Length: 259
Image (cartoon, rainbow, N blue to C red; front, side, top):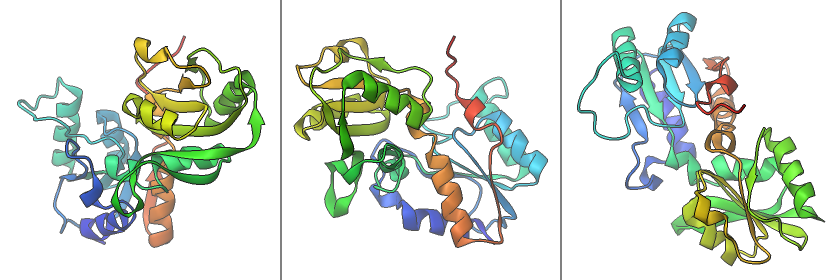
């Protein structure tokens, strides 16, 4: 198996051509011709994840967030990004990221959130050409009172804390969502007819919402981490006898702690 065989399977699911212009999805470390014996899947390519790959004998890492995002002006072992790059290169480990590519397909980040909530008639929230785009929107099987819905979200998405705007005084019937940082789609969520919008990284002033609409910040990591299991299932289905593993420390890799 070569790196290009793995990347072809990923890109059949989430093509590089649909990534956002500011993104850096794709093969970030290594060569497409490099031989691969196993793939480790994680959320962020941290030095600890590279160490785990080395310990397991995996020579390719697949993550959601790109290891190299902005311009690297310095690669130092004292910096987490630099340390991960150095460890990956010195160990001969290829690193690939499926970031906004996996965000913009309906079977990806936001669509997975919608399915975990059991929504019906799921569609792309901010649709672009050919049925791809950021976010998802759908209908609950039954209407819920706002506080009941927040508890339902926390239970279904395994969220320890939810930051909410004033709860709506109407039943929540339609729900919009965008995994990760989704504040820019609040207007799209309101236009979709949703009573509630789920995303992460909502700033203070965004919590002032109009009557009949509420926002719920479930956290950046919490809204996207399930994509790791989606990618795992994708590769296991495509290569059933190939060594593919999800990091044993996946849930613990969230850099945000709650006390």
